[in-house]
Length: 422
Length: 167
Image 1 (cartoon, chains in turn red, purple):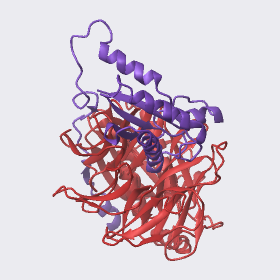
Image 2: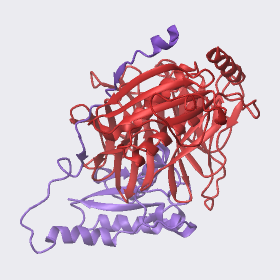
Image 3: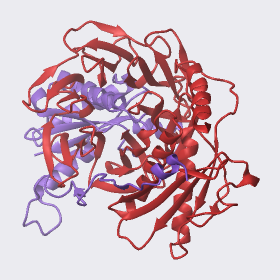
Image 4: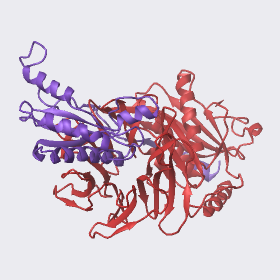
């Protein structure tokens, strides 16, 4: 019964936000309240346990589908008449986890308990091979708990993020992380390595541009066997901007004649086809409409803005009629999110904001208000956007939950974020 | 115990495969960089000294905020660089023009802006008699600041084109 009520309430909220460009300014707080209990044995490191608790609590909060009890609570795994109800906390649900430190894997047993009846409604044992990847274990648990209440999927939390960060002049590294940056593994070092882009949905390989050779070169790094393969080189500038849904086509920004244009590259045949043709700047191609069309950034009106065209014809359509410096964009179905420089003064540093538009309506929604908000990228669902935030010398990964109208930031401890993909 | 609870108590062990990575960390300075010469044990060779001298004598070209056209006050530096690179001692070398931007923006557009700056400088050099085949361009976007302070003077210094002399 409680599940049905929760689903109904969530659907009620979400139905108000069917158009993501419409901002919800007020809603009734009806989300289920959940408490998290740590039932790990005492021999499990307490810092590890608390770190895991924070990851779960953070995930459930970011999902925007729960009210999360802040207190870190202990319990036995079986629980009892008090632990299975937590009457004083007035919660609807209890998430209980038990970590195993003895295994080489990251291992957790998890229960979801209906706090009104004390009945376990879900139980599962989780294990992932590399202990350091435990944040992904927490994210997987959160995704499953979210599914249990019938809320819209948050499976994007399981996606890996690949990002480049500047470490010093002409030097950057490429790192794989979870969305909270709690797990990080440096994959590429040495020289300038930028614009990483996942090569497939499985995230088993990524493309990136390296400046280590005579010309900028796109490489593909396979994570399964560690092999690295040179894909294509180009003078001046070369970037893999997007990968088709089947992974067989790439949108490249290239400048063979010192002018950037967008090219379509066939991974299997290595054939390359020029898509845009303009004497100024065309960059940042993104596939839309089942890979039949692209959106891209061009300065063909005298300032950078968002345009679209079919792959097979040259008719260009202006997509955004707001702002005079829209320098980065990402698309999903009918939605385009873009970064816009708010004023053209060279004295202002905090002047980039993100905006969301729908190609079906005239609505425009401002998503950020302070700092430099750059490089927006949709998740695999249109409700979640990741972006780079630079604010007062701090570089962070931002997550926007559109329907909930909430933004979260995860700070990078060292370096400055250059680009992201997930 | 209810049927629901009995069903849900069936514990499924989930082995998340994730990306079973074999620690494939790559150092791009190994295997893809230019080969280094051998036998130079007295610091720089005569060739390296000449290249270093030409690069030191070249003049940096600065740009306005969000612009890639060569300013009037920078034209004299273009002329001086063209004369330098067309001199008898430099004529055998290729010239790489590196375009750079200030710190604002992390996207492809910023790299394209740096490339346009390098291209403008290349066009200026060619207009002054340099063979276009001797000049290549590359953009480093915002990745190569000479100054990291947060003020206008610093950002002015970073919006620039520099020169590398290649044998």
